[in-house]
Image (tube, rainbow, N blue to C red; front, side, top):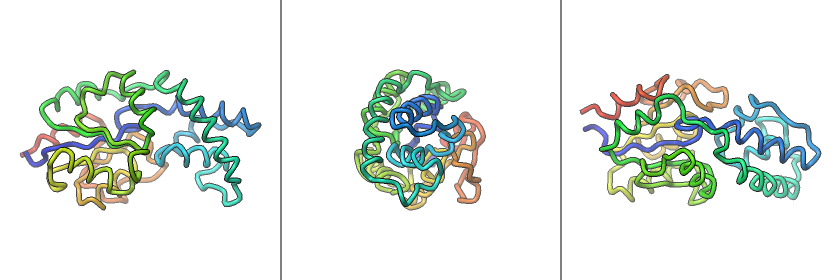
Amino acid sequence: MKYDIALFDLDGTLVDSVYDLYIAINLTLSDLAFPIVSQRLVESWVGNGVEVLVKRALSGDMQVSEHLDESLSSKAILQFYKHYEQQVGEYSVLYQHVETGLAALRGMSKALITNKSRIFTEKLLDKLALTSHFDVIVCGDDMAKKPSPDPLLFACKKLKVEPSKAIMIGDSKSDILAAKAANIDVIALSYGYNQGENLKDYNPQYLCDHFLDIIPVLTQR
């Protein structure tokens, strides 16, 4: 086959987890007497890790305020961790056909590459019975986050595969940029958390609208 391993993003690619994040963010904002925000806003802010998400919520904007107090940010992040640990996986659901698609790829080595912290990643994977699908799991607190190529290259090394024989599947600019920096082909999925950007502008090798659309790409010879 053209590809020996598939590297998957988590949130926005396999799992719709925004409602958990939305609740945890608003509980955090309420604790700090900040105005709560809409689910749509939270969805537009997802993709760069928890710390950035919390800072965007405190700023009320995609662009983190340059006047944001560091001690306030640190306090808010700790509060968010507390709330999210209780919340993670409660309302998260697999996107349509994810289970079918992963089962169809049972014979292919797979890695999960997420910017989410390991404590939350493992809890979410367990709740949704996804853990067994992956040979390697690389989380946001293991090393540099996407768009760094480091986690993708680490997964290739662990699975003893050249980057040219790997493909990344994700829903955001960070996934595409990480793959390009690692010289790895990438499938961009249009349905996830793309922060309002047109992923086509970043020239992924493949652009798919549905999860099952990735199967012919991954199994081509």
